[in-house]
Image (tube, rainbow, N blue to C red):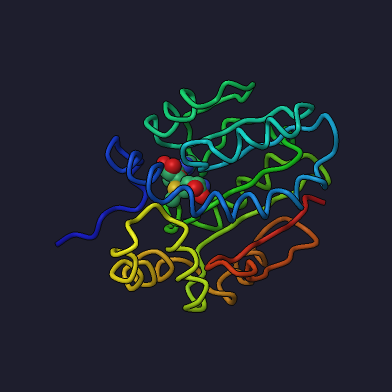
Amino acid sequence: MTPRDFTTPYRRLESWVYDTVLAPATAALADTLGREWLDRVPRGGAHCDVGGGGGQLVISLARRRPDLRVTRLDRSPEQIARARRRAGVRVELVVGSALALPFRRRDVRSSRKRRLDQALARPAAGLSECVRVLAPGGHLLVAEADRGCHLDDAERFVARTRLPRAARALVLPGFRTWVAGRGIDLDDARALVATLPASDATVMRAPGAPALVIEARRP
Ligand SMILES: C[S@@+](CC[C@H](N)C(=O)[O-])C[C@H]1O[C@@H](n2cnc3c(N)ncnc32)[C@H](O)[C@@H]1O
């Protein structure tokens, strides 16, 4: 069997499953990361959320920071349609690829990219593209599944999904193999940031979550 192409945009069913079952778990992590990080984004700046699923996080961010110009980009028209139905606040919604962001150089004061997996074939290219559109001093934040995650953190993540309780123990090995297992480890993350035209790069494990966090700044 040919493995599923990870760069295929989410279709209707996948969008629904992701949005309904999994997004509550990723949103909890993203919310924690976003709260601290948002303080570093200057007033009146522009923020772009790349590959942001159904838009839950970017919408809550736009509510918290009405001074920001917020854009949400995703390759899947289905995911963008979900974000549009949910929005109700001023968020620019764009169908486009992380590998060719439709922004001028230095347009964006901060960008956040969650899950590199769909761009795994070219993760360095995807991240360089995010840095390219940052204004000088602009911030990059990336969260990606941690291939070396602790079992406790994977369990906690699965428990936050909307999966029926009885299914969680069955899903856990699948999560570790097919989601975390296709993520990156700390060495991969360090090698990735070394390729970026960015400064002040840091790589760390997200506390209590099966995710790695990369932060960097455009010089
Ligand atoms: C696993 S979901 C993650 C959603 C969200 N970031 C979260 O943490 O809940 C991955 C999202 O990235 C989008 N995506 C995949 N490849 C992409 C690419 N090359 N450019 C932009 N978006 C992409 C998919 O359509 C999907 O909505």
